Length: 208
Ligand SMILES: N[C@@H](CCC(=O)N[C@@H](CS)C(=O)NCC(=O)O)C(=O)O
Image (tube, rainbow, N blue to C red; front, top):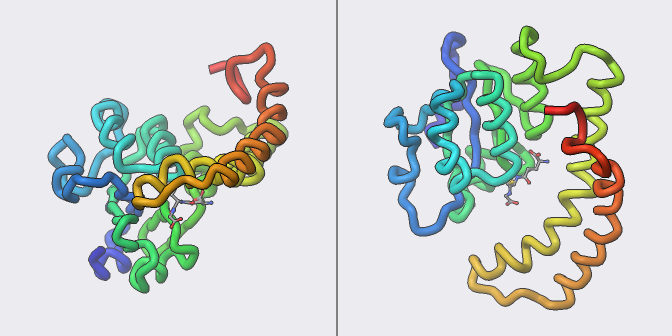
């Protein structure tokens, strides 16, 4: 990452989204957006559709939800890929903008925002004419409610099994069967909340 990017004074430019580069066996340049715009990808809808498979390869869920939000809002984001396998997100330069050492991070001019759900909400609030976030307070709070639920307990439950079944093999380590069993137990405790809520409906909230 270029330190100059941390002092983005060009207020007219698109916000910068620092997100994960984690695909193994691909060079950074080969993963650049198929739009040919280098690391700066425009998230207008057609472009975002074209780059969805690219998104899937390089962006884990936390970054992906921000990219999807930006695409739905036709918001333009400049994307800076942070190389997770080499630990770029734990280096001092990145920790200056996200002391948690996690992606994604949004930089809008001089202002920096961490946490994917906060970033998604910020992008939606920047576009008040859209109907992505309802105006009605309880309807908005209900979205926040599910975003909190996703952060905990849902993701922590999934992470146990994902670490064993996905990341350990990628790191050349063997999955631990007892951890998988523990993780599945946690998922089975948490998932019924989701199942019960989804009974008779297609979406957590809203109809489309
Ligand atoms: N609560 C954070 C979680 C972010 C997070 O866990 N990001 C993952 C990728 S999806 C990450 O950076 N992992 C790197 C690591 O754990 O070292 C958010 O929603 O932004």
